[in-house]
Structures are given as C-alpha cells and as structure tokens.
Amino acid sequence: MLVLGLLLLGAAGAFTGLVIADNLSGGPEYTVSVLGQDIVTMNTLAVFCSGLALALIFCAGLGAVASTAVHRRRERPRTYAAHQDGPGR
Image (cartoon, rainbow, N blue to C red):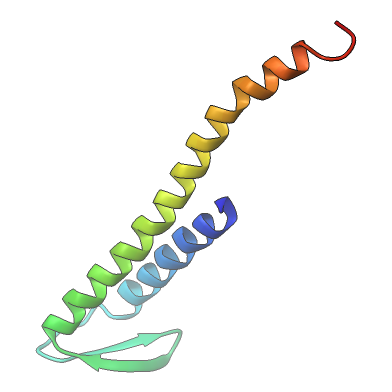
C-alpha cells in the first residue's frame, strides 16, 4: 500500500507540474499539452474539475501513505515485545 500511495503522489505531482509548465498561456479555451502533445481543449469549468480530480488522486495517495505509517507504528511495539519474550527467556 505504501508503494501504491507513493506512486499516486508522484504521478499526480509530476502530471500537474508538467501541465502547468507547458500551459502558461491562457484564454477562454485552454489546449492542454504535455511533452509537446496536445491532449484536450478545455473550458474554465473543465480545468477546475480536472484540478479537483487531481487533488483527490493526490489526497488518496497521501491517505494510503499515512495509513501505512500509522499501521506500522501500531504494529511495532507488539513485535518488539514479542522479540523480548523470545524462546530463550
């Protein structure tokens, strides 16, 4: 789950950075291009909605990373105690 969360974070961040860097000119209609390829032409509402979708993907990745960290933190004391009470003691 940690790898999937990091992948979502990286992909959403990289795509957002590329789109912003390649599309600094504006107008009533935006032609979105990434790495020299025109993907789609959007109006202002479509750009806003796609920004919301990218934010949700980023938050899903962040939630996956955070839940993995919390899960590992909760499991660590039990495994440490189990090693202390091993068969030799």
